[in-house]
Image (cartoon, rainbow, N blue to C red):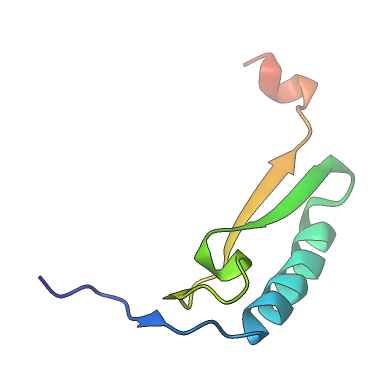
Length: 68
């Protein structure tokens, strides 16, 4: 079975790519942002992985959302 992605050797640019995306996410979520985490294989130094940066964004609960 062929995978739709390729497993690559660790690339130190993955951390830079995450940091760039993190800045964008901070701007998008603003005060609603609780925290941002770089997760997945690209977050682990010297580990092979697919060249997709996985990011977990934790936002603050909003009362308008909770009242739905």
